[in-house]
Length: 239
Image (cartoon, rainbow, N blue to C red; front, side, top):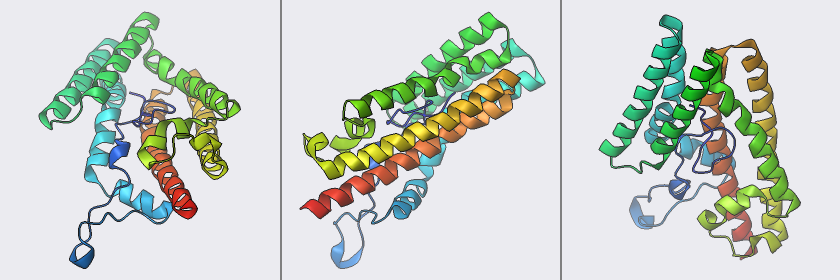
């Protein structure tokens, strides 16, 4: 389904993004073995994030129900497509359980697929499957704006613990500036995402909708990785 779920969930449902793993590299060999090597730049964080094959598998598992729905709707019809999407979501849960991974994201995915399937069945239209995910960017934009107004930018609320920031991070001007930039970027991404989805929902183009939803996961995972590096560099500069 919609793929903007990181375990930072901003925008559409994103594939499971375990921020506790990112961006923590493997120890170096040799004399510095045992020390963790953190990315020194945003580009390094991006390369490190997407060098993990499990990340790509997670994205595929999260995107699969909506992609399967579109494919099944093309070759069959609406109700077989709904069934195919549901089976795919359940298969994703089975995959995570078999890998002994947290089933949380898969369970959320099943819930989302169920809601989308109900909407599609009630409307009798394939595009109805994407109605709820199309509305999510608007909700996220409002949440991000509210967090900025409250001087607690959303990425700070979600990532401060992961980055090891102070409890009162929002009182730290430099940290707040980093999170304000990241949260504002999330707003911009969601504005573009919302515009694309509204346009193509109106046209009933489910292929573009499915691709747009699949793309949001990598986009927001990348934003998280870069934000974590920026925050850690800011903290290091203040020590």
